[in-house]
Image 1: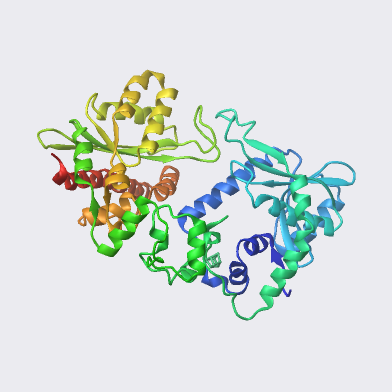
Image 2: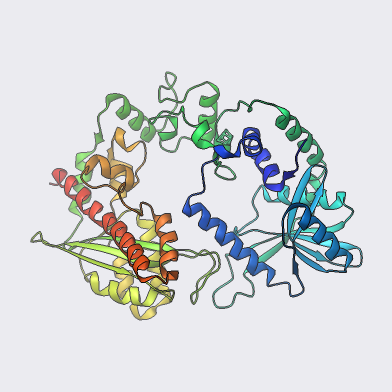
Amino acid sequence: MAAFLTKANFMSGLQCHKQLWLQVQEPHRATPLTPVQQRIIDQGEDVGQYARQQFSNGRLIEGNGTEAVQATQKAIAAGATCLFEAAFSFASLFIRCDILHKLSASTWELIEVKSSGKIKEEHPWDLAVQKYVLTGVGLAISATKLMHINTQTCFFPNLTNLFTIADITAEVDRLLPEIPKKLEQFGAILTENLEPTLAIGKHCDNPNPCPFTKDCWQDVPEVSIFTIPRLDWKKKDLLITQGVLAITLPPNYPLSNNQRTYVDSVFSGQPVVDEVAIAASLAALTYPIHFFDFESQNPAIPRFDGLKPYEQFPFQYSCHVLHKDGHIEHHEYLHTDPSDPRLPLIATLTNDIAANGSVIVYHQSFEGSLLRKLAQAFSDYALQLESIADRLWDLEDIFKKHYKHPAFRGSTSIKNVLPTLVPALSYKTLAVQRGDQAQAVWEAMIACTDPVEKQGLINDLRTYCQLDTSAMLEIYRVLLQFAL
Ligand code: SF4
């Protein structure tokens, strides 16, 4: 193999040979990172830096490539006992180790920091390839550990147990003999002039979203086997190997009732609507009818009282209220500074949502669980928040159970339903178009010191959240044609 492979290349090779080839030979074909993906990477770096603080005697190896390898060798020779980002190269591999910690005069422990809440299937490979290199350069590694986020028993402000350190030496050692074989295989792939031909499949998003899907998935039609609701990957992979990407399934192909309804609606071009069931659902609503939506954040490192790592907290809501006489009000809250948003948000929310009347949401489990968590954390408002949670009515249920339309592309997301039922409203022209984007923009906004830029971000967030609830209101109005 001509050039060194990084650990990231090695992990790509495990995921997909074509991904490895493209990453090394034609990296320019990768789709650039979105701000949301960048935020996940930034969060991982924050977690890494926090992990380093747990080792008081650590020394950070700076620089890249050969310079970093030499700095590492120098630090070890000088008697360093804990290194961050130590760099090594061996047998066509180049690696950086998150934490290398000396245990005795001659042995080290290798610690990989992950921002996940558990050990994942690919993590032992990550450590195995590092151990292979470290052993190759003559370091004795007596333990390989994974330091991941403790999502169970850590609560802000006590972050002393933010991490769980799991010793996975046995799993790593089981994989070690596989590393040279993999390297040989990957080396052979990379000597090819042409990219490998490989079918798309579950591996395109597992364990990580592949940056080359734009190329590989370009022949997948807009309506395809991937739009059939909850079709499992075993079936999809088999269909792919048979060359079936469009929804033209073999005769008598086994599908659930829900899947069959969708496929039939695609072929007929007609929606399948259970008008009686929709009418019965709508009859349960009482005025004033609230159309309500939260935006929330869930940082790996919690920053407000009582929150666990990755626990959601709301920072914004929008609420349209439809009164019996037909008039509509709009209320909203957006927290605009880095302080805890929960209490001021609750105070406004319990004022904006009446003590009676239905509360329509889209995907009830999300708003319901946030409301109940807020009720637990802020007992002064518990009764009001529980009352709101008890009155939730899930608009998405209509599209899960009673209204299928081929144009929804097998999804019940409001982003798919809205363009068909209310074409006048659209997310496509907005600066913020998705919930995860709103999270990234909120972080940027609360940290922003330029008043003009900050106001622009505030406006973008308000416009997005407001569209969520006006979309629900307008979809509800469309459904009223079925009301008794
Ligand atoms: S999109 Fe899928 S098939 Fe293509 S390179 Fe990525 S993982 Fe491999």
